[in-house]
Length: 244
Ligand code: NAD
Image 1 (tube, rainbow, N blue to C red):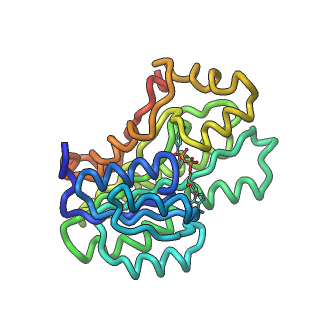
Image 2: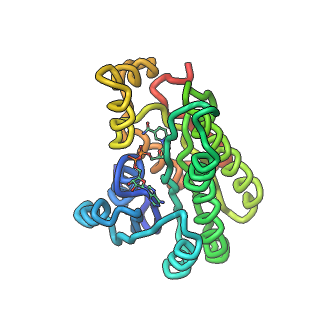
Image 3: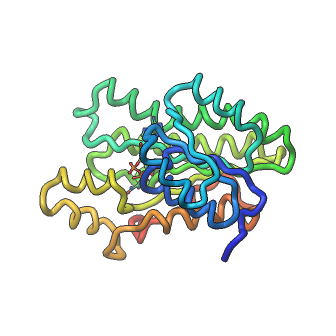
């Protein structure tokens, strides 16, 4: 299929690697004009070869930068928020700094970008779709994911609250809850668990394999497109059976 997002402008955060990158590429393949952002400039530079219209450095933890970026970009049709960090440990290993960092990057970043882009999405007419990358950890926390699970639960509810408040303005807001997906940071987390680390992560998936970033991007394309026009305020689970 192609052109499912033709005529739409999309902004993707954390697009240098993993799920964000796959979403940016999939959006462009479906005809969207994509602005791909990340703090890792080298990582996003290569995206122009993948049909991405523009790459821009953006730290989603910096409110002034997010506001200036949104002002420059203007009206968009799709906002995909992918930035997130997985802290390892229970509440006992989670310092106040760890807690604040996780909530700032995982949740408040979405508050910043949505707040910055929403006024123009509404004013421009034609509606818009906000897609937030949450996690299955929001719905059923795995062990040692105390602050990650808490922050992703906040992402899911933030998405629902935005969906409800702007449903009559043509804005849809949904979250995607991936299971374990093979991405650079996921492989680092597996390696940190020792030689059996990857097997341990695979064993959480009842399908017996990790997901691919492209499998998550397929859901993001659906949510960004008008095919999902009747869908808002939900968590869409793409998890290889993690929740079963
Ligand atoms: P990743 O962790 O491999 O890459 C994350 C990207 O975020 C990097 O390119 C990094 O430069 C960027 N980034 C970090 N801080 C940033 C900041 N302040 N501003 C802008 N960009 C920043 O990516 P991933 O594993 O695909 O994770 C992407 C999202 O998917 C995260 O929200 C994560 O929680 C979620 N998720 C991942 C999995 C998984 O198994 N990989 C499962 C469920 C949910």
